[in-house]
Amino acid sequence: MSTYTENIRAIAQRLLKSCQVELVIGFRKGTQPMMNEPCFVSTPDAVDQLVWDSNCGINLANYLTNRTEKIGIVAKGCDSRNIVTHILENKIKREQLVIIGVPCQGMIDKRRIAAETQGEILEVAESDEQIIVKTREGRQTFAKADVLQQNCSVCIHRNPVIYDELTADLVTEQSDVDPYADVRELETLNSEEKWNYFEELLAPCIRCYACRNACPLCYCPTCFVDESKPQWLGKSQDTMDVRTFHFLRAFHCAGRCTDCGACERACPVGINMRLLTKKLNKDCFALYGWEAGLSLDTRPALDIYQTNDPEDFIK
Amino acid sequence: MQYMGIEGDRLHFSWISSAESTKFVRVVSEVCAKVKALGPNQHFVKKEAKVA
Image (cartoon, rainbow over all chains, first blue to last red; front, side, top):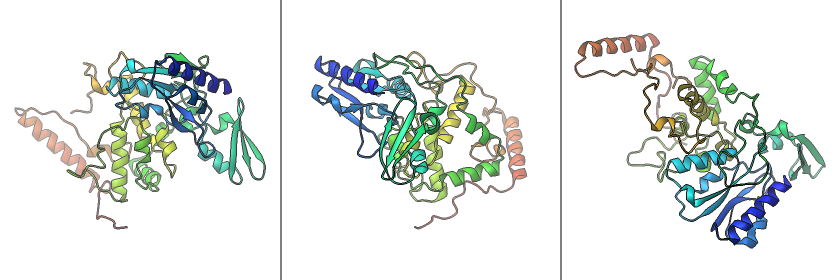
C-alpha cells in the first residue's frame, strides 16, 4: 500500500512539473480515522498530501463534472468506470484527463469496524492483509477480507478500465463471487414482504441527500427533489416521499451505476440504498448484457435502440 | 416496481394504434379484471401529509 502512495505522489509531481495537468485530484488523510477526503493538488510541492490506503471509497469522478482545465485524477476500478460514463455523457473530455489508474484491493467498511471495536478508535493502520485498530484501551486486529465494504467484496472490476499511468501491477479480478446474491434473495419474497422490507430499510432516512451528493451520476443542475415548479414530490419525512426519492434516484442511475458504494458510504444512518440501484444493474445486464462504464466505444444500453431489445412487457 | 413490492398485475404496458379499437377494449377489460382481482391498492398511497 505504501508503494501505491509513493507512486501516486511521484506521478502527480511529474505531471504537475511538466505542466501536463493543472490539477491532480486524489485523496489525503482525513481529520478522523478511516475518513480520507478528496484533495485537489495544483502545485508540485503539495503532492506529499496525497495518500492511498483502504479508506479511499469516495468516488472521485464526482469532481470532474463540467470542469474545463486539464486534470490528473486518481482512479480505482469503479472511479474509472464512472469516468468513462462521464466522458460518454459529455461531462468531461477524454483529452482533458490524465488518469492515474490504481488497481484496487477493496475498501474497508468503516461502520463495520467501528461496530466491532470496543471504545473510541484513535488510529487505523494497515499492513498487507490486516487492519490494525488502535483505541485508548489497546489494539484490535481484523483480517481485511472480513471487513471489506460489501460492494468491494463482490467486485469484479477492480482494475481501472482506462488509464494513462498505473501505480502498481494489475490485480487479479475476483471470479468466484456473485455480485447480485442479495438482490436475488429479495426477488424471492412476495409483494407484501418486499414492500415491508423496503419500508424498514428506508425508515431511518432523514432526506439529507448525502447519497445523491456523493454519487458521480447525480450531476443534474437541479435535482428533481429540489424542483418546486412543478414540485415532483413532497419534501417531508413521509414514508411515501422518502420511498419515491430513493426509487426515482435509482431509476435515474439505471444503466449508469457502477456500484461504487459511494452512496451507502456517505449515508449518515447507514442505509443500503444500493439494493435498489443494484437491481437495475442486474436487470440491465440480464436484458441488454450491459455493464456501465466498461468501454468508450459502446453507447449505453438505454441510449440506443436495438432490434432485439426485449419488449415482452408491452401487450 | 415489482421488486419494490407493487403487485405485477397493477402495472400494464400496451401499444395500441388509434385504429385498433377492439384491441383497446380488450386491453382495458383485461387490465380492469386484473386490478379488480387484486383489490384496492394499499401501497404507494400518500394518505395525509405528516407534520413533524
